[in-house]
Image 1 (cartoon, one colour):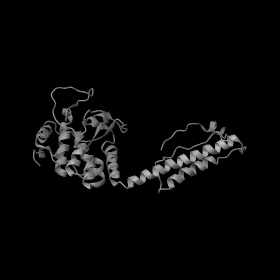
Image 2 (tube, rainbow, N blue to C red):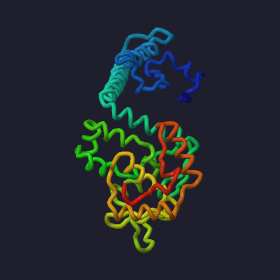
Image 3 (spheres, rainbow, N blue to C red):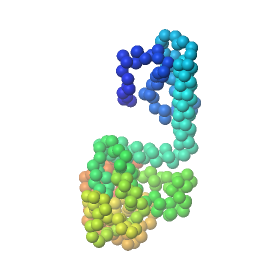
Image 4 (cartoon, rainbow, N blue to C red):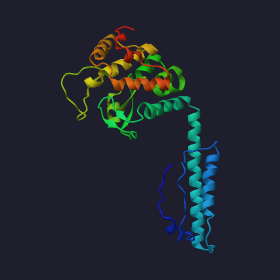
Length: 286
């Protein structure tokens, strides 16, 4: 873990006896709750150790009293933060779907796109540090999955449906996308929209009504992911949509980048998308 100090050691040495100063070591991660209560004890012990630093004895008086008050306040604050982190960690243990989904996303960013890549709809390049503008897009929308399974809202499905969790975690259905485009897409179906009324700058994507039209360079990737989801989980694709996707599959065959992605996901999940290996498998009907 890397860190930088806010004050150098020489300057700090002149302040060690000053009752108006409290030294706090922030190199530790407050989210690191160790065996429940050990996390809070770790941080409380850290502050106690810092407060017992060597220095000339303090004279009783207003400044000393204020120093004790500040120290007590900081101890309470650190305990509250650490206890909150421990509770959050325990809550995630009670929600196994959260661990599974986070693990899937870690695999997506650290393995599938370990050297970076391009976003699905806009082709925006990103490196190992994708930042906050890029998130994970489910090509086959999870709201469609929830409706098909009849398990309620997405959050309710996550807590009640193991089938939903398995589908949500499947990396063959998850692609990097600009968060703005991901949100705009929502659960819109794929289509072809007349004209080129682009609302997102140079990004080759159009959205109108209940449809979204991606650029020609990724239509085949989308089609093969959609056919995979139908074949793997028995999810329906309506005939008109299937006809469009079948054409996209023919017009935009797999390239080296898509095949490499398939290889990496196989190493993580143990299964491939057969429509990338053999695009001719795509049919209108399952």
